[in-house]
Image (cartoon, rainbow, N blue to C red; front, side, top):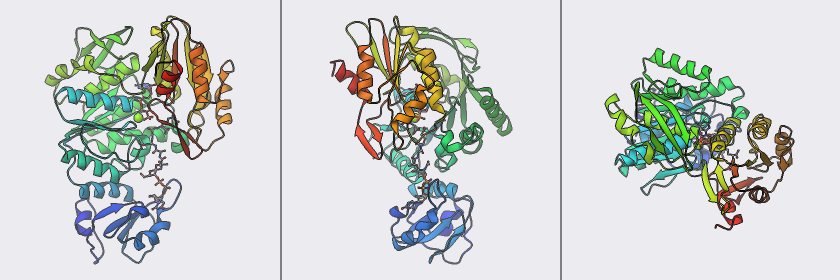
Length: 483
Ligand SMILES: CC(=O)N[C@H]1[C@@H](OP(=O)(O)OP(=O)(O)OC[C@H]2O[C@@H](n3ccc(=O)[nH]c3=O)[C@H](O)[C@@H]2O)O[C@H](CO)[C@@H](O)[C@@H]1O[C@H](C)C(=O)N[C@@H](C)C(=O)N[C@H](CCC(=O)O)C(=O)O
Ligand SMILES: Nc1ncnc2c1ncn2[C@@H]1O[C@H](COP(=O)(O)OP(=O)(O)OP(=O)(O)O)[C@@H](O)[C@H]1O
Ligand SMILES: N[C@H](CCC[C@H](N)C(=O)O)C(=O)O
Ligand SMILES: [Mg+2]
């Protein structure tokens, strides 16, 4: 496609006489080949303009830059370059699945996206989900690189490929990084969901207000005004009020879920050994109680949010809500890894924020006849402020806490543990994660529950720049003799 046409289709005008044929777009000079339109973008670490010579040497025929730059090929300057990258990538990749839903929030995105995929599949639709757990789809489509929200070029290619394979329903996770960096701007959405907003990622966003603003973009800029907008009403009031204001300003109807939701309200939940019995009201009508095979209030919250993102009209709502008892658990989210012969059990969970840790411990407390034991840490090169807050939660909510290493990345593991430990001085500290899990298992008496938190489905531990094979579930099963 000619550059002028590519720009015209995406709301821009080519102000040059040179009009090259564009085959691909990218912001990474290493991906450039002949016929590429290269986007020179200012990044978090580097300035993409520094790679223009490499891009041109590799075959770039034009450059779009978000700040002044020079090259031997035409350079177009626009402050909206990141958005334009996503839009042009989508145009060149081709048609996307007709129904795409995106979910944002600090915690619960992966779970909600996976529940959406399950609900659609239960309806007999061809569906996929894409996020932290990778691409989950019943078709042979290569997964994009492992980010929660992939870069816009990979995302456009994956969506087009799914559409070509007949997958018409896709649930996406919209991370705050992804929203802020316009990775999703080329996706045409039918539905958006917002689970909650609590502390995370302040290393990147700086303030809660900036973090919130990034997430609100999903409802403010990306969801068409006639799209389905669903939110958990039990979230913090500042975010909920902002969502109501956006909805009012854009004339969108907001579906609300949770204990204080008015569309799909949780009236009651009672734990069962492996899940919970819930009572819901839908558009004000009380429904018969149903059994979820998922323990924990947060899982009921995610299931309700997923359902509320699905139905097109009020008349279809009931049939979708009736599918909730068929949902199965999400890998590494409050997942029972082993039940010991003495009746104790060990769970794996992905809680890596203070709120998530609090929620998973609160969720498993009613299932615990004895003591609640937690093994956890915090990731390196990530928001440092959450470390003592996680320590405080463990001290308050668990009977026995063991502080260990998560993914230290390039930080000194000992200093990460120390920051947590300062807020839970009674906790044991065992850096080696395998030894910490072993100590947690050894502590279990009949009726106790162990939660190994922070790494969920992850298959490796990142130490420095190296990823060492590590899977909490396998380690637990091995140590418990159940492997
Ligand atoms: C901090 C961050 O989010 N960085 C993301 C961002 O990179 P960036 O643009 O800031 O990169 P940069 O290194 O400063 O480089 C600037 C520019 O130079 C270009 N470049 C660089 C080197 C080169 O040789 N040639 C070249 O052209 C880069 O392609 C880039 O366009 O855009 C890239 C492309 O979309 C992402 O791959 C990259 O994710 C990095 C790897 C990352 O670790 N991101 C994490 C923090 C992240 O995004 N996490 C979220 C949240 C997870 C959650 O929900 O909790 C996620 O969605 O996964
Ligand atoms: N609705 C929720 N409210 C609070 N905590 C939750 C909720 N859902 C999940 N959690 C907690 O957060 C953890 C991660 O859940 P999930 O993977 O669904 O979230 P996520 O938003 O995708 O996380 P990430 O930002 O890492 O992609 C769970 O293991 C659980 O501890
Ligand atoms: N998407 C999250 C995952 C954190 C998982 C935890 N195990 C860690 O490494 O901090 C992040 O990149 O912040
Ligand atoms: Mg996720």
